[in-house]
Amino acid sequence: MTSIDFPKKARLLVVDDEAGARESLEAILEDDYQVVCVEDGQKALAVIQKEEFDLVLLDMSMPKMSGIEALEKIKSHDKSLDVIIVSAIDRALEATSAIQKGAYDYLTKPFDPETILTRVDRALQKRYLEQEVSFLRSEMAERSEQSQIISQSKQMQEVFQTIKKVAGTSSNVLITGESGTGKELIARAIHNASERVQKPFVALNCASIPSELIESELFGHEKGAFTGAHHRAPGKFEFANGGTLLLDEISSLRSEFQAQLLRVLQEREFTRVGGHRVIKVDVRILAATNTKLEDMVREGTFREDLFFRLNVIPINVPPLRHREGDVSLLAQYFLAKFNRKLNKNIKAITTEAMAVLETYPWPGNIRELENLIERMVVLGTDDTRIDQGDLPYDVLFHEETVHNLPGPEGSNIGLLQARHSFELSYIMQALRKCNWNQTEAARLLKIHRNTLIQKMKTLNIRPRS
Image (tube, rainbow, N blue to C red; front, top):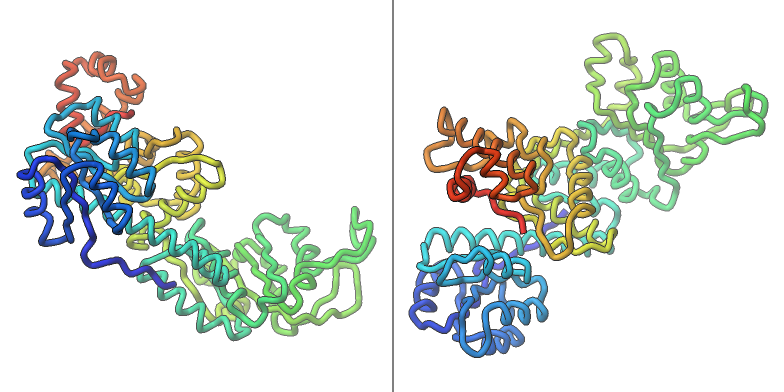
């Protein structure tokens, strides 16, 4: 899986009618970025139509055209171009209006260099991730189904290399990994990169089939073989002839059937249930499990000879929590996917919400992340962003998430971190209970509303629009 190369120096457009403000911003940004400055909204629109930019820093109060009006025209020209609004006055209503109109962020003067650089970097990282998702999606349309495995992590690159090596063989492959890591996608990628791609790919979840029916499912049956067998039916081996058969959750097979499967794998032939004719097949076997078969072999619940027959080439799919950088990439991918599928327009996932997603351990792996993003899109309102307060309680306040969330300086460990985590959790619970009405939440918390607002600012809790 390749990834897109982004420009080393992003191009920024600074729009402000005050020469001092333009010079100040240029001085802060010019070491890291290419900076172009203009003095009003009309000139900004003219230059945007001629040149490419990665981010716009836009003053709120300007002559000829207001910041909000310029923002609307910029987003009308290029929806993907993020805009950070800069204002001389910290007005919550003004900030909310700007965000609703499509602004990515809102800053107030005087400029703090560290804050500006941090916010600009966050906005660019979001843009780059969106571009990479778009790039990967275009690859999916052109390449084999392996491209549907969205990843930029080093661990998954090693899996991709193994897929390339084994695809051209007919050797059995055992795919292991936690539930929800995408083991079937790996199996399909192997099939689609092989010479068997024109033949069927058949998947059977062994755990979903009652033990008394598994033999019929795999090998088929003759008419009258058992009660309810009113006609002859081929099994999965026959359907997959010439192609690939994935035996998912192979560990659930009962021990007496394991011996029968082993013989079929060795001889490449079988008889239907209730039949006598030997049927020969050419099928490549891929097996998948979230259980350690080695432990089952030691315990005597899985045949050692079957294990070695299946485990010719092992592929372990790492859990999402060990795939560095993939949570953000997948979250952006799923957001775009469900926006299209559900005809919604949830604009983005905020930096604070993404920080929570990246620290959450994802016990359900990619499937859990996909389901969460789908829920957020279904419940979300068009032209808004998924924020920290929109996330479910069990994700937001999971022990590992709270422990790893950034806190005030010096509070990474010990009592101060514990207090920070507790206050964050307690205040968020009150805000949720009061549907984010700050006055009611302050009354519930038995503190003054101004104290609550200050606490929210300290804990980086953003009011919901």
